[in-house]
Image (tube, rainbow, N blue to C red; front, side, top):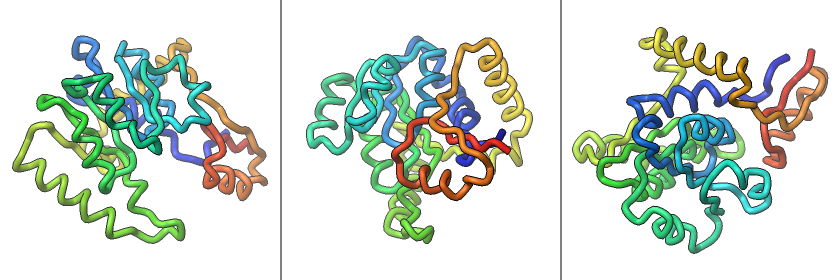
Length: 217
């Protein structure tokens, strides 16, 4: 079997383990939109207190996987997050990028860290790059080199595997162990025959699915 969408379990697992982000005295992690359920699963393994951006229509499904759920389309969501964690979060994970990453960083405490592992906002509906979202992301990364607190890191697993393959292999081995012991259970949203690949892509793009879409040969 194969997944029509790239699994984020390996990326989320590596990102949440990076520099001990998830192992620091039950530190809090703020999850913004676009991270997916894999990070929520791993946050529970590490005993993190989590605030997760989840659309209202899906919040019932994830109510037991985070201490605080919010919908970013609500005008009061940022204020609610600050009330939930007045002094800021220890770590934040953002798969959107662009201006969204600036908002996410603002939720961190000075000693916190923002991990960027996606740039969904930088891709238009037709697949072309959206420079209006790429520019603010580049500016944020440049600024983070001068103003180092809160820290910002772009975690690109496709690039990291070229220089830190041993680290990636170790992360994957850890995830496989967690899967085999059923400590984490990936959410399967749909199973389709390989011949239905087109429908699978349409379902993925519709965003009307929760969990992985699995293609069965």
